[in-house]
Length: 53
Figure (tube, rainbow, N blue to C red):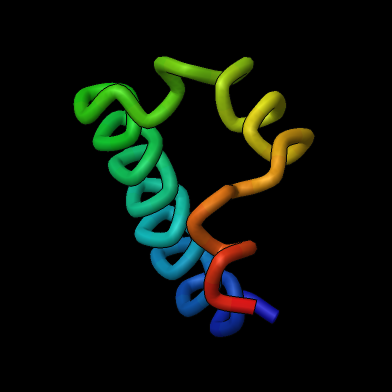
């Protein structure tokens, strides 16, 4: 039982750190800047795509 903890705890810390680093990278590169724009773009047709159909 103790051997599994010695294996699982470092892995969970590394994965948690990677998730935290990815979150801070998203904040730094303004990935969460325009939340309403993406939600509204899905409602409107893209005129360039309709010409190719």
